[in-house]
Length: 263
Image (tube, rainbow, N blue to C red; front, side, top):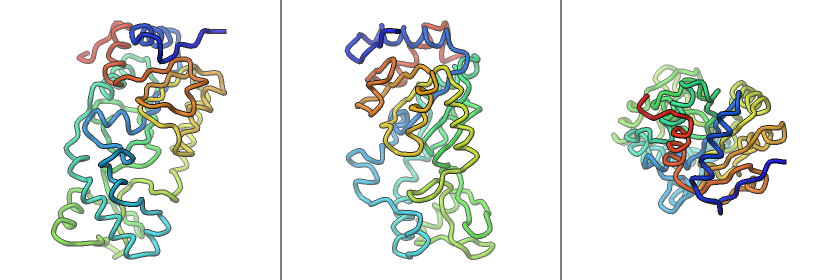
């Protein structure tokens, strides 16, 4: 049995082990959470000062049933929009894109809604929780540029409605109580159960059903690497656990593979 490398080992040993894993892998997949984007200045919802410290999340059923819930939802979106809009990819995003372009990474499965993986150059990104990059009409499926909706909110509109059919608009993100996109979830499950290496990056691994994907990969025989600032429920079964910056760690992994961010 291969010896597990714990967070107590030096970071050089840990990143060297991850580099070796990539060298031996043919089907690597990355699974990312909010922690990768905090390095771009986007606050984790759960962190002090994050959106959820000021607002309770709005359940999808409440959004549909309650005007007060819809007002609260859009107020939360209005407050967080500028932060999302101005964020740029960091070294962690760019490293994953580099791994993909070098043929070392099959795909990125993300819980994030910010679109930074695509901005960094990743081409196969599965967005489990949707995207903030557009808004959608719940009646006719019309799409709207979120800049336009933000302008309306800042002009005093509290609950944006569809210009075409008058139904409610909503960010194309997945709310609590709303089903994950079935085709995206199915593809993510297939990738994880077929992977030989999964990197869980910046995720607390507690929000289901997404959080169970790295576990399914491990149970199917994949090596599991976790890079996260805090403990996760899967630390005990991971092959490597690293509690350092994702960007710095992945940049060192690239070095072990003879790659760099600029290529």
